[in-house]
Image 1 (cartoon, rainbow, N blue to C red):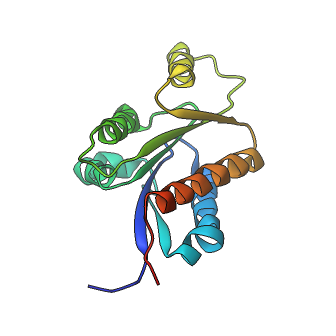
Image 2 (image 1 turned 90 degrees about the horizontal axis):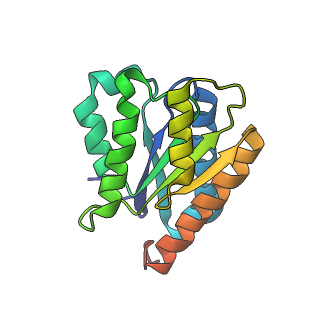
Length: 171
């Protein structure tokens, strides 16, 4: 076992469809918050997720286990739940884990990318369902900059909540 001196908190990043750019932004923001805020407090936010949608089909059980081991769930959505809508099932697994006091999951957050030209009624209905949920924070974004700014606030809040709960490794 490697002793690294950090209290680690895993964040599952779910970005189904063609949201690779947004996934990269999420990882960059988490890295920046780590560098500026978390690491000086001996806290490390660790991003977990899939590099491409096909992995959820090939490794569904492993993906579910990764979700169960995470402290935070970050859902970015525009117009696709990926193959066989499996990312939707993963999102609901994240909510189940959050609602189970025996699991490490503390919060699930949704970032909803604006899709002004969307016409698919099923997608529009699910977007509306997400926006109306009272049990998750939902943020809307239309640019990389707005996603970055909002996500920085969320991740910084998570670091503060971890510290307030006694997290981090004392010197």
